[in-house]
Amino acid sequence: MALSSALLLLAVLGWAEGGSSLHYLDGRSRRLALEKTFNRSLKDGQCPHMLKHLHNGARISVQMPPSVEGHWVSTSCEVRPGPEFLTRSYSFNSNNTFRAHQFYYEDNHCTKPTYTLVVRGRLRLRQASWIIRGGTEAEYHLHRVQMVCHTATVARELSQRLNHSCRGAVKGPWDPSVAYELWSEDAGYDCSRELNFAMHEMQLLRVEKQYLHHDLDHLVEELFLGDIHTQPSQRLYYKPSSYQTALQNAKNHEHGCIACRIIYRSDEFHPPILPPRADLTVGLYGQWVSQRCEVRPEVLFLTRHFIFHDNNHTWEGHYYHFSDPVCKHPTFTIYARGRYSRGLHSTRVMGGTEFVFKVNHMRVTPMDFTTTSLLNVFNGNECGVQGSWQVGVEQDVTLTDGCVALGIRLPHTEYELFRMEQDARGRYLLYNGQRPSDGSSPDRPERRATSYQMPLKQCSASQPDSSGAGDVDDGRQPRRNGCGRPHAAVPLLAFGTTLLLSGQR
Image 1: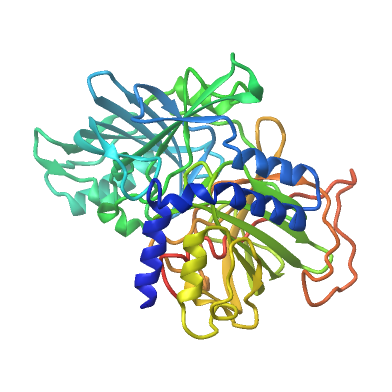
Image 2 (image 1 turned 180 degrees about the horizontal axis):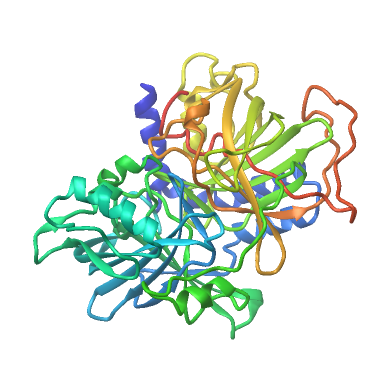
């Protein structure tokens, strides 16, 4: 069987709502196997508890079809590929019209607004997505796009730039705090292409509801819109296959979300200015886990758990893959380990820290019949021992230089970008670079990300014994600050989570 055909088979069979009767018949055994994997790999009590909570559904309900009527806002300063720093405020009306505010900034904490785009149009929901389970496809139609600049310098630079590319529509120099037309259905012109502007994020939606801390008075509603292509020049042609950071309903958001309240009260003439914050030092320390069932481009759902040993610069990663958007039906798990470099401040992405990660050891555990069958059909010993795979049984693939069936080659190097923040409750969050939209790997410095994935949350400040996690122990002690706490937490490597459909690296 050809490699591409086999990968497509796994994707289709794993995606189908029922897959086959085996999808449900072996559900109990797969969950038992997954729990055994936890017991083997996760030593700290809080970390497996947090992951099991996610795999049990985390008491999240999904609206199908989604009800998007209302006002939705960003929960923090967002980073888009480029990089671009922005906050969003989107209003959807009962007559299917919408008005979207995108506030852009020159800094990574969204304290210095540069310009605002005001987008008006109409949205029509279609059917459940055939590509991303749990998502809903939609069509949008733009009526009008306006721009308001917030400084004289930005107004002058943008008017000059647009005057060269869109003659006739942009006339003379612009002034700050004045709304100018970029796109008009009635006038028949479009000057937004110069900014690589598109609203294709409206083509894929998902609404989730959950009651925080089991409190029926604390409902949080989140709206996930389609992801943005990691190459800005491709945004005009890209159809979303994953999601951006969620917006929260302005009426039902987390009580501690200060940014939500600020953005909700803002408009194009009074852009939101978020409270100034210092950049936190990104260290390599402790254990981190996913906060939600994560989505990768195409049909991948997973949760992650990372352990970093800063005494010898080694790391361990556990990747739990699933066939469904709430991470209840496991398909396979990957355990990887290797080494990482010292972090350097990014000169390209404000607030980011650059690392180089190396992967030199990997184990794979198939968790369902479909994945096990796929691994067993490959000829040659390019993914463990040929024909030896069994459901729930882990196999080391280091000696076969990875697993060609999953598109993974060893040894492997990735050039990564990370940042760290604290949420409203003071918990540390870790972000690593967004995976390339074309399915490639950031295996060269020029492919390093300029935006981020969903953050991970610290589940333990301690790090278990690093024996077996790396090759060399240089004997250094963990770095701590004067309060006896780790400086911060660390990035995570998303290796192996986007490779299933993209073939060999």
